[in-house]
Amino acid sequence: MTVILDPTNERVPVTRQLTPRPPGITGTVAFLDITKPRGNVLIDRMESLLAERLPDVEFKRFAKPTFTKPAPDALREEVRAEADFVIEALAD
Amino acid sequence: MTSLQPFSLRLAGTDKQVSYPAERPAIVLFVKEDCPTCREILPLVAELKSACGEALDLHVLGQTEAGNLLLAETLGAVLDDSDLKVSFACDVDTVLSLFFEGEQPLVGFVREEWRDFWGGVADEHGLDLGAIDWQSLPEWRPGCGSLSADPMNAERLQAEAENSPLRARRIEVGSLDDEFEFMFDQGFSDGLPLVPPTPERVMRMLAGTSLDAQEVIAVVPPNMGEATVEKVAINAVMAGCRPEYLPVVLASLKAVCSDEYNIHGVMATTMGASPVLVVNGPIRNRLGMNMGLGALGQGNRANATIGRAVRLAVRNIGGAQPGGTERSTLGNPMKFTMCFAEWEERSPWAPMHVERGYQADESVVSIYTATSGPVLIVDQTSRSASQLAGSFGLSLESIFGPKQHYASDTLVVVCPEHVDTFVRDGYSKADIRARIQEVTARPIRELLADDISGTGFPADFADGKDAQALDRPLPKFRSEADIHIAVAGADAGKFSGAFHGWATGEIGSISVSQSIDPFI
Image (tube, rainbow over all chains, first blue to last red; front, side, top):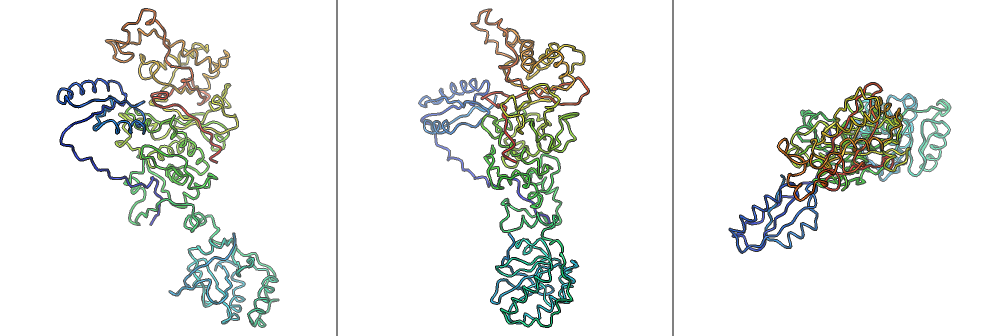
């Protein structure tokens, strides 16, 4: 029998649970643009479509400083504090 | 430190366990059956055991299973230390060695030492040693090396010892399993076979650095895994590194995990980027790195395995795996490994690490992010430096596409024959950079998206700009600092090479350097 040492970080990933689906969309919806080219085109179109269907909902725009790095903690906190929902425009 | 440690061992040929310390005082003798000195002294040991009677114990510890059974025929009772753990714990380097609590051990056989020692024991415990004919015994015998100090066993014993520096989870591969297949199945591999990281090999690898095995060198994205020296050493073993390469791997991993370098983005990007490692300073020669013929290719163990170890560490410690957070559209072979040394001695210019502010005698690794390369710059006909640097510029226009300026950086590897052309005309690195910028400068109007290609500045970029603004020439690179230059390659051949970069600067990745010396 051979014994080898584990080359990984040995962490067991945490199983995250989905937030329960809300009955309707109310309050504030955040659009998070990761700043890849044409992300704003997608978000502009989505906002105009959603605004028609959800006239009482407020929309807010957020953007990552760069698409190549994870969102900074401060930005995550800001989105969580100011919005009830978030739609992220990934990739180009 | 050599001192007697508590133990519990089986009597050879029986199931009976004997422990030390116990109620009776005990003397402990380490022997090995095939040691000539031990054999010669064996009758004396038998007499001494008999003389000890009920007053005290004389434990004889043997080091081989078969040999212990033979020794037991003469001595009656031999404790089986064939797994050598007690010999190792007591730091026995020679058999025979005689230990008595609180006293310096007697190493080898010196007749006068033994007579004095046993005389004292006899007086204290009332033993009768009158039958022993000391004069018939040899005056001096050196003994043999203890198996616990044999290089064949020492690393295993260190790894298994209670104070072992190893903390990684031990994975038992079943005797019917093939360990190479097992490692593929576990997802540890980059697609090529791995060297099994056994505790013995990892112990040997750790000898390549003076750092503590549990020191955290970096936190590796995307899973933010802590890269301890031990974890990096495990990946270095798998990659095929020699222990002396480990400091370069450690320094490189620290460098790529910096915020400036941004290994998270480099691995995640669909563009398919990968780190390129350039090693400078004295360590290049100590490791026998290739900086000459075929330096950017295969065939040199240090070049190949250092780069591979860094990639495996990012994969296994950080968790960046293709299809997971690594999402390259095409990928590239540099994702296996890309590491070379600069041929500083063949260069008339300050080497890369000195340009970046390090001392010439410091060993440094510089990391650059490449999406393509090395892309060959073929110029066998230019006779002047300005022509040759002009060719470099024209070739570099292809980075991302000719209309994409200010988008990336480059690492140009100048081959020796091209170096000679530059030297003839007194060209410096700064001259090369300036010439590249000069020949690649294009009016902005030529860099707009059009019917031929939709790349470049968007067509509406020209809106509201006057002719003068659109005629402004824009060179390929945002700054001359985005043109990194190193010298490598064979003496023959007018073929330099260029690595093409990724998103350069704070938006993506900034080339970084790290001193290797603190990791040695």
